[in-house]
Length: 296
Image 1 (spheres, one colour):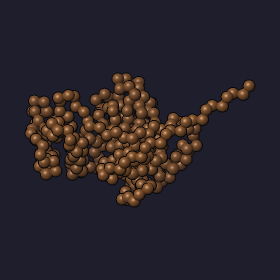
Image 2 (cartoon, one colour; image 1 turned 60 degrees about the vertical axis):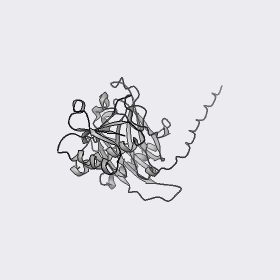
Image 3 (cartoon, helix red, strand yellow; image 1 turned 90 degrees about the vertical axis):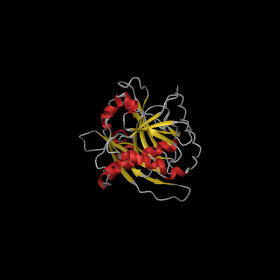
Image 4 (tube, one colour; image 1 turned 45 degrees about the vertical axis):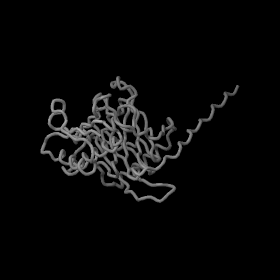
């Protein structure tokens, strides 16, 4: 007897349209890895997500390679809608060494209205793969309900570690994409609206934000002291903006003692851009000399 035909796959229902926001006119793109069982980092699987926190569509390609290799492997490509988290795939323990070098290229556009032109970019980043197995390397994120390893690719329209566009590399990536398109279909990508949320601190405890540049970036090569300071101040502004309505919240900004350049930059921000908040040195006993407390 003939076997009954298998039912046709049910198409994923379309997401409701994302409302544009003023902040979404600047591109903010993040790639993140979320463990399925954070208590079993030696054996768990990870889900890779691409976050498009902007009002723009992105045509993208995501590639990686291991240290010591010259050729790149295409991991995912396609289009991600505005304000969407896109599931890029499953990562196993064996896959992790292949993520030592990350490459991401994109073109940003809108389909139904005029828009300000954004430069396309190719971004290369180095990823310390040992972080996948260290619990303290997983951090809260405004885009996820659980702690993740997150790598900013574009922050307020600024590509992080841009690289010159290599025509031969683009041609290789397109060949790899055509080969990938001919493979059997895999799991339906997960698409969900990004959900920005406040970084939470335990009840009654302050929110602690470490602004040391090594906590914000994995790779400092090619960055001038001015570049590093701008990145640190941008992170300070992001935290202040996200907590602007959290009256009474205490935020500890750890900036280090050093020569006081970052501390003075933060105090300048607090006296001009963020007036009206209570500012004082944080507890030396808990945070040392290099920390400032802001109460919203």
